[in-house]
Length: 300
Image (cartoon, rainbow, N blue to C red; front, side):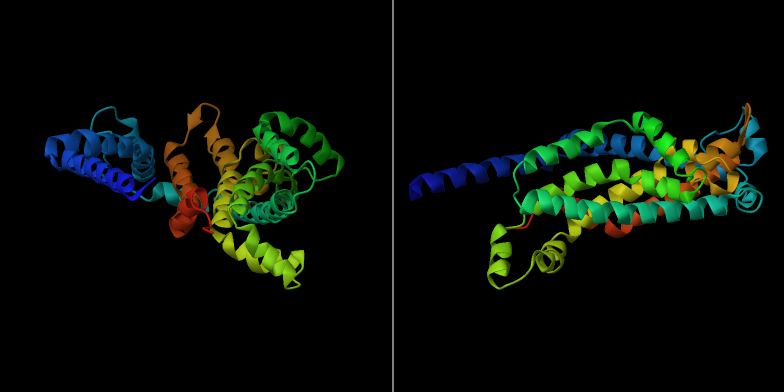
């Protein structure tokens, strides 16, 4: 392509960009194309959290009345939070969820880093097939895996312990984390590794001093994903845990705050509000790394 063709192509591109910006300058068109769709998306996304919040602060009398404004609280109360924190084992459930999710996340990340590095950087025969097999393992529903895992947990004597969940959660965390890190490791130039090998660095030194520092956004993305899945997991926690004090937040709220056909909505919504805060805090701190880890790459 000569200079004139390049200049013509750039002029056309600038013309299209200018036309696009002029289209958005019109206020009615901006409302139709930007503000209204964005407003609908935000409303659908945040309304469940809003409903959860107002229900947690509503007195029982307001929830029982059919009259009045169902979308607002007339007389806010902290009774449901007090009941949840002091009359139920919720603090213990919260600690169980934090401990299990954190440990399972670190175990899964460690295993995923080694697996992804071996598949993408060592270039052994059949590495692509192994990577594809790991991703297919992620597609297996946990509702199928928990049946053989239950037998193993019983045979090892781990039933009704936190260890049972810490060891079973990586079965669905490692496959996706490995697949995610494989894509990120693939974006790191091989020249960096080759130069380090020429200088006498070992594979371990390359992984620790070159690959991992360049992969921090990918590691954070995989960590957030693993932590969120562990925190919200329900089937394994319901199957492998029976005692009240060992339950996690999702299972404890559902099984202990619902008595037959009686739903303690205030305490349920307060528990759901508290249960969603740790994940929201983690996302708020690492959202930039999360986005760059999902979309970014290392430039050569």
